[in-house]
Length: 99
Image 1 (cartoon, helix red, strand yellow):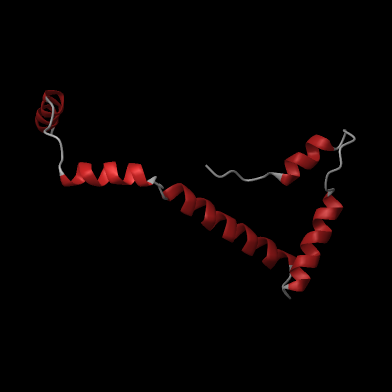
Image 2 (cartoon, one colour):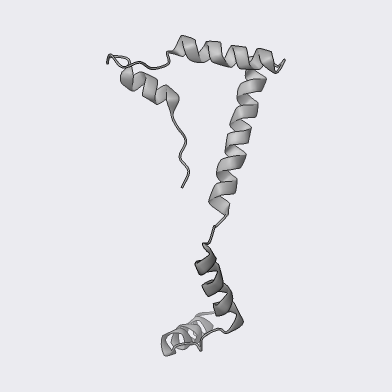
């Protein structure tokens, strides 16, 4: 599944190391420049980016993608469902008794 890159955490983890990472000041400068290019304030830019990422994340988690083979198997199962097993019939009868 898709994962969010936590740039701020990566920055904190690398502060003591000699690796090249974005600093808090560089992140702020990038946000300011991008916001200026879109003619919006920083808060609006960050909120819009967070909203877009939130929508994208939810969309990806709510959708199940099937391969062509999986799709064919799924549709075949819908078209010709198997007979219920004894275990399933027992479970259904227990469910009816529990209500």
